[in-house]
Image 1 (cartoon, rainbow, N blue to C red):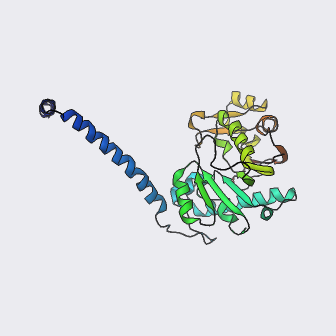
Image 2: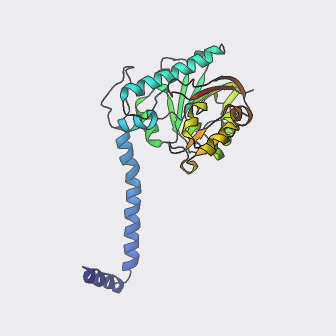
Image 3: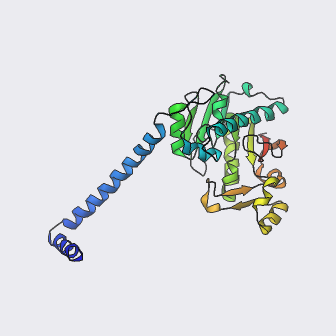
Length: 279
């Protein structure tokens, strides 16, 4: 076999232009693979769903349910989304705010629509979802026609004009961002949220101290943001832990903290919830 390969290489070198032709063919094959890959991914993401949820909407594929809910179980996917929407309503009502009084709402890190599907009954809202996973955005765009969806990169900016939204919510997104991206995203929220608009965040708080080693737990108790797996920004491997003091003094700059409920994220159990207002 080695002799045949060596002889073949000598033959190629002896033919004028053969090397250039071989390079061109390799380049063409690579481009064909790159062109085919998005089409194959889109076909997988938009294939007809086999199941419908109790809310009458299609269920995303099992792998997507696992990405956003930590399990493929359709029951928990639906229940956690319902509880997330319930958390939104409760937090707003405590401030005498009503979801149906808003015009434009953004689900930042919408995944495959776990929460936004429960906002469909609010017909008065212009609903938007964005996520860094293009497969899940493709699925949402295909099956959740009551909202507008777009993709974003792990780092800012978003594809929206200044002052686009009355309300933005982000469940378990900052829990997976490194320190270098957290303040830039808060500045971006300040840009796209209208004056006096509202931002809701769910974060890893005191409950998650047991996930940290002694040194990191000590830093957290001193009021510092702690992040593990920073090199995997936007993925579950990256985990961020937010002490209340850090949120109030650093993360929320440019906003007023109007409510804080430890372990209040019903659909993301044990995460803290903060409600912020843009001045």
